[in-house]
Image (cartoon, rainbow, N blue to C red; front, side):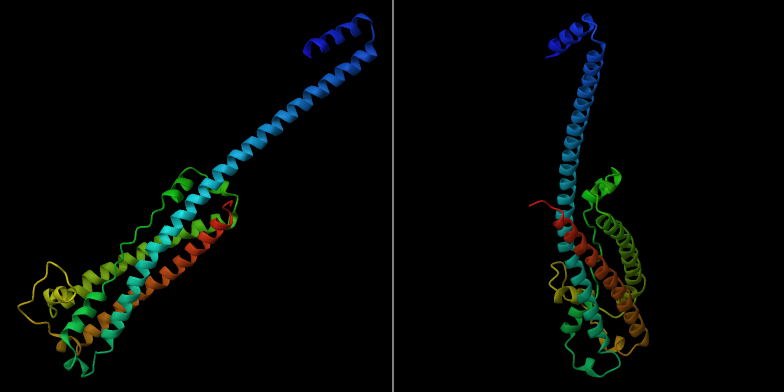
Amino acid sequence: MIKFYRRLRFELMENNKTGKYLKYAIGEIVLVVIGILIALQVNNWNQKRLEDIERQKIIESLNLEFKQSKKEFTVVKENHLNSKNASLELMGFIGTNTQQKLNQKVIDSLIDKIFPISDYIPSNNALDDIIQSGKLSSLDNSKLSSKLSEWKSILHILSSRDDKLEEWIFSQLIPYLNKYVSWRDVGVQNNYNWSTKGALPSNYNYIFTDLEFENILENHIFFVNESLRRQTEALTIINEIIELTSDNINP
């Protein structure tokens, strides 16, 4: 084909057919331009296809990651809710005479439950990889990008809340209870395999008439409730991210 065009061009020049040669030259240029445009279009299409595949992989990994985070986070929230409920139940005995009739084993069980597990560390490998590689904008979904940013922010807030709760427990709640509670008995009641029956009894009759314990327990409930409030916000964001990523996964 190339030889044919070269021969045709040579013949036109030999026969001094300038007009026809110019038309031929223009036609040849047009063909070259069209070829270049087609090649660019094919290259752009292929590049877009690769980007779509990459985007799908990212969205699928985010979807799986946040579904796992939801499972773990739900357990943590349930633990905090149990802590709050146990604390409120203990609060109900303060200032009344019911503690005289209350079984110590029930109190031991409630004392153990007021300590929530707050060391939740979600797996953010997929999200961290996206942020570090600068691919957040490649998701081409402003709402999803916004929710992912909110998630990072709420994690920071939750970590701060957990730190404050932990500091409160170890600086105020446990030091107070150490004076009146037999942790050995609490451990036995809650089936801790290292605990044995205590030699000295817990003094629950005193703590349920002590204003200091009431104030400490009230503040403890406040800190746990604040963590719960933030956890509820975090679960809302998790659910929104799961929904957004599910909508963008090709069947």
